[in-house]
Amino acid sequence: MHPTLSRQTAALANSISNLLPKKLPPTLSAPENANLYELLSRAPGDVKGKEVHQLRWTYSGKSNSYWKITDARFKCGGKHGKAWGILYMSGKQINEEPKVIRTGLKYTWGEGRSTTRIVPSTSAPKVQAKPKRAAGESSRSKAKSRQRHRSSAEPNSSD
Image 1 (cartoon, rainbow, N blue to C red):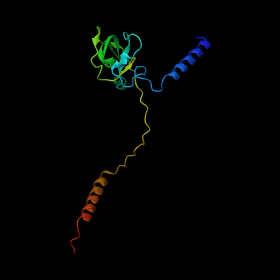
Image 2: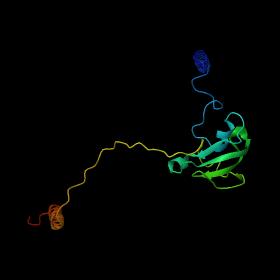
Image 3: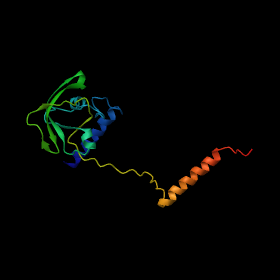
Image 4: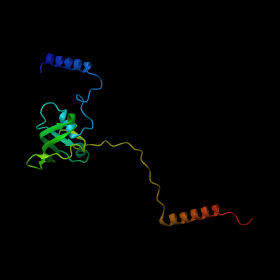
C-alpha cells in the first residue's frame, strides 16, 4: 500500500471512530457472550462458509475444532433461529452432509476455529507443609495433648 494512502486510511478510520459513541450499539459491537445466532446475525455479509466454534472447546483443549456454516435463518432480530453446518473436530471432518446445529442457544460461541488456550500461571502464595514427625512421636504427642485437654476440662474434686 502506498504510504500516503495508508495515512489517509488511518485518518479516515480515526475520524469515523471519533464520530461514533464510546459505547457502540449492539448491532455494531462484537458480542462478548453471544449465542450462535447473535454471532452469525451480526457478521458482515453472507454467513455461508463462516467458521464458528463453542468457546468451551478452547477451554477444554480441543484445538482446530469448528462448525463451517452452510445456511442460517434468523428470528427475533437475530437472537434465535436455525443454523446448518459441517462439524470439524481436531481438523477432521465429522459429517459429510450439513446438519442442524443443536446447541446454538446453549453455549457461548466465537468466530473462527478453536485454539489451544494457554492459561497464565497465577502467582499464588505457596503454603509450606508442616514438618513430618517421626512415626512414634506423633501418636505420643496426640495422647499427651488429649490428656492435657481432659485434665483442664475436669473440675477439681478436691474441694
